[in-house]
Image (cartoon, rainbow, N blue to C red):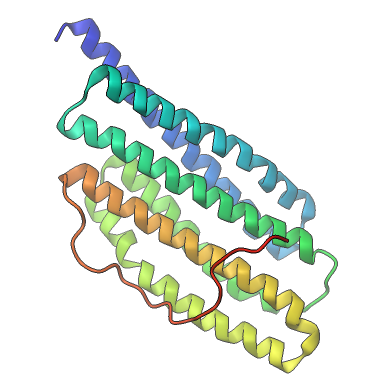
Amino acid sequence: MPDHIVSSYDQDLEDLRRQIAEMGGVAEKMMTDATVALVRRDTTLAQAVIAADKRLDLLQREIEERSVLLIARRQPLAIDLRETISGIRVSGDLERIGDLAKNIAKRVVAIADQTQPQKIVLGVEHMSDLVQEQLKDVLDAYSSRNLDAAHDVWERDGAIDALYNSLFRELLTYMMEDPRNISFCTHLLFCAKNVERIGDHTTNIAETIHYLVTGETLAGERPKNDASNYATVEPSV
């Protein structure tokens, strides 16, 4: 293959990596800001998170289009084909992470005028902090193609599920203790579920990294400890 064609192909892949890195940065900031907005009941920050989702959606569409064109024009093989397919997968997970962060921000707007004790929010904040670490770690692992780091994120999924189950019971206790907490805690339950689902998407990315590096699907059952039967469908607010 002529050198100029190889150089152009390498640039296509580099542009794809750059856009995925940008998507990761936007998704990380959306999740961080959504959590801060929840803890502080900051509706201005929550609205900024909601607005940021448009940028994430645009990037995801651009990555899909770029990847399809790259496959059609270059007909990549082996690792290059896996990188292109992995880019589509990762961008899809990041887009969903943005949607879930936006859902949390919408909940912040809905509960802004409620005055429940701040301690009720602390469990969701702690869970979100752990998932934010997972998101950062898995994006670093994707950037560096670090298989061990990706497997570490994959293994931590069960701990997030267990924490969600504990938080689920804690919020139910607050509701039973005082009916005035029911509305607020219901919104928090959905926030917690959104955080837990973001954790699932970080695990998806970890599995994609395994496929990218090895060419194989990650064997074994994903670690799960979610025993709650709470609705996973996010209703409109």
